[in-house]
Image 1 (cartoon, rainbow, N blue to C red):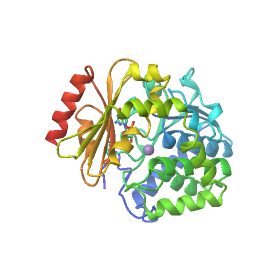
Image 2 (cartoon, rainbow, N blue to C red):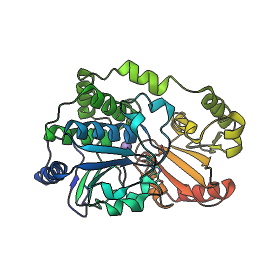
Image 3 (spheres, helix red, strand yellow):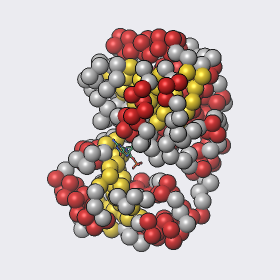
Image 4 (tube, rainbow, N blue to C red):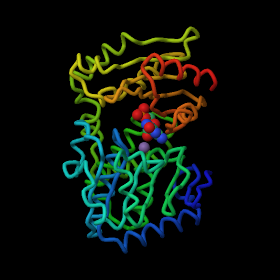
Length: 341
Ligand code: 5GP
Ligand code: MN
């Protein structure tokens, strides 16, 4: 159980049935804010993944069913593989009029800065509702529904949807199922609980088609992404003892293959899948020249702590951070941090 500053956190556990009265109180507070609100901003983190986009769009559809006005803002482009998500065409990439919104849903973010450069705009919005499952979230807003034991933000969101009494439409189901599926690595990671699978089953009953969704997310890979993987694999290094695997992707590699920064998705998971590897790192040169390190681990090896030493964060087995310096310096700093861990 995490002790949130505002007491709105939920301990990890089997499903949400065991919700404490604390959680009920926070949910009721959120429901009161929703009832009273009229215009909502819904937002999530930069370089959005399936949970960020799926959760945001699920909230969007829920709010619309409640007769509210809602705008989904995500700073970065929506990766093509998520364009099939119902409502994705309505996502905007700029906050033009923050004063219009009485409430913001901040999803899958452990801090405001995660939404990108416009995060200061959120301070102009009266109510902030934060729903998240990251370890590094300390419950920075009074309306915080945080469960570090939940598979995804989508999973936590469903508990709120149920308490709100909103019927789960196909649009909601497809978005929630995608959030669950992507954040659990297709129901393989340790965050996959029986409650996650029950919820996934419920989403299928409400119209989510697992085959259709998997095909869009996993089987529409642009050739450039495979070519990038091909050149990335040539940089694969395994430590002498076989426990640390790393790979790098430079701006030049992206340019040579005609690939986009988002095309590195999944590479680090592939490194972790190597027998004997317990920590996997992908070093990616970002458009601004900084190096992003994506970390994955097996078992109890805590990569969230490593990312946090560089100002990043995430989960025990999956985290990321930005490292100052060029590729060589970044690798050196990261190697030192990993040795310390
Ligand atoms: P990925 O390597 O897939 O980009 O990120 C892995 C995990 O780390 C995700 O759960 C993501 O939310 C989190 N994460 C990625 N980048 C950052 C960051 O800059 N700051 C924090 N706090 N978490 C991050
Ligand atoms: Mn997530």
